[in-house]
Image (cartoon, one colour):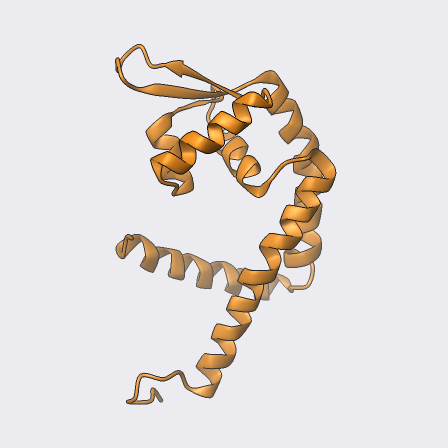
Length: 155
């Protein structure tokens, strides 16, 4: 039963605090693991995954920004840092005179290929292994439902 005051009920508060606890602790653990195995930040990893998921290893700048849900300025600054490290390059889009393609370099591909197995092992250890197959299915359904709500209620 929902409280009329708008405050969370004890079970709702427990769920919310557990969710927030995971949200606060998990990114730091994942970041330290990535830093240790490939000298990558989580942001680097997110960008490289988005690029390597594309069949040709490139994405239009705006598509990449939308995929990772970053503002243009954040994407520009981060790509500049990644380019200095040789992980990505930017090329003008021939179909769009003002557009830019972001391309993963061979070095960027090598770095993510090295880091990915370690990252997956960390995800497995911290998130997948503690759950039964049924709990994992439930987590998937719940997260997909929340993501669906977020998609319906854009920023």
